[in-house]
Image (cartoon, rainbow, N blue to C red):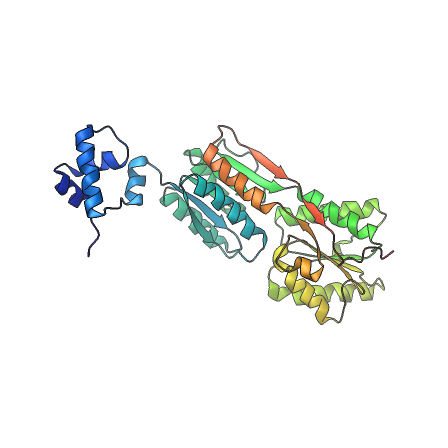
Length: 333
């Protein structure tokens, strides 16, 4: 059976398609006419086209979400928070994953704009800021998650973490566990990564410990982690300062870094401490100490900003929490 159309409903009710559209979209129509239209809709099992309704309304009732990398555990709870708010508002979530590829970021943001989403939540890099700024200027609320945007227009908001504090919590905890020589595996030059490393360096300096530049290595993917960890260990041996702690500043690389340490014959925490970002499904079972982000609450707040449409730009900063387990050897000193 073919799907009933708006023309079928109009023919059954003896009205024009424009009248059917006004009835479906809550327009002013005489009560007897509206009754005939709704009766025809019920008989035919007609389901209004959401895209068509969006055209009449000027915007679809959909919240667009562009995620940079779904492999990070941070994003799962973030999406759950967004979806909860969207569902309560009768909205759907249109989701896209960019796999950390700039051209996909730009393409997905462009598509969301073409789809006339009611609002856009992005975790993209700076390359997409031009397009998202233009969307905000045209009245579409845009929320950037996990970083801030300089001089945002009125319709552009941000939901982020205090990343310097996240790094500081790591440094204070490691120093308190008696660790002296710390190495860092980070992921590129995103502001969150730079700020976490800066906070870690600050906390170690307050404990009269250093974090030299050569003790920070970059791994953009899981495949690069083995070489990055190997380089850290080799440099430490060359300086006759064996590492006794490794910090991973992104949850996406947690499993890869932990596996690389194990592959080098190191036992956590007896041989080396390990501390990372973000809760993940096996962190408690493995006893790994993490600095957790309230990603669920961040997702909810991002969606609320889309729904609330504040007149001025809003920047929301959440605080991290250190969840201490046994991977840093509490009481090591």
